[in-house]
Length: 367
Image (cartoon, rainbow, N blue to C red; front, side, top):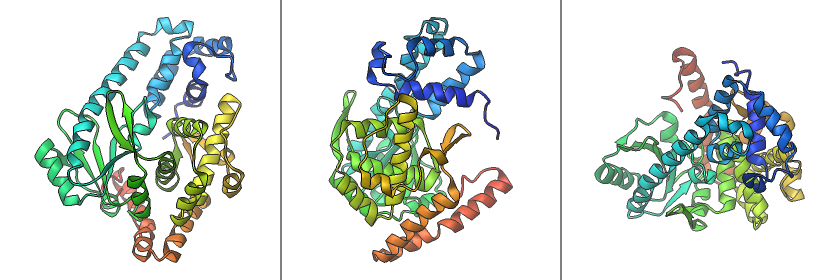
């Protein structure tokens, strides 16, 4: 699949809209790389196809509510009613999703502690799925979802079974509820992270609701697992989320390094955060504060990342393969034999997924 030729230009504009300082919301653009006038000239030159691409990218990167309102300060915005409509539609989707998520979390709490992971990291935007982590028994999770919410259980793929996660479809809720039960990671190899996740989770308000979410350090670990060890691409929301968290300060980098090292994720995490800082610098002139010991552990920065097929792509070979090897070795030498065996099955699963995709055009039953 070839990229839309408009994508790189639209992604660049979207990045400047999202990664600009908060003052841009109120119309003060003086800290941006591009002045207000230069940004206006770019947008005025947009064709209808450019606007379609921009909107599609904003949805794919979960930045609709962080990007589109800033377009409203540009003169050309008056000509495009879809901007206001898109904002209202997305806000309505988020409000509806939270109204379902709150009672689901409350009900699952009866079976064990529940933490909302990943989905709320993008606030005021929201992910496309609603992800939960729980230490309850899978049997209790299934019972609660079926009995109290009449949820349909989606068929588990091989990857879902290894990761110990279930997807539920609830009537009236477009988003799937994805519940990770006692395990994290592509193959369910990470259990220590789950213990930290629950112990250090915090109650945080989102609109009129309050949910337990991971600590900033655990959010970084989870995002690293998802981006550097599973999908191998980075979204604009990931860069914005982590940049904001790092700039707020208060990150316990010693704890972050300790947890990442015992989990075998340290090199991947350090590289991920360096890439985030590089992109922040590229689109607004300044990076984010990172300690020297983290930067020195990074294997590369944004110079090896390329924009393709709508996202920022991480090189799989040899770089991501080395992250996988480091995780496997650390789990093995730490005595996590069963978990290292689970992770050791990943190449076989990846091969099966590649074969299935070549034959049927989809790897859905595998991953």
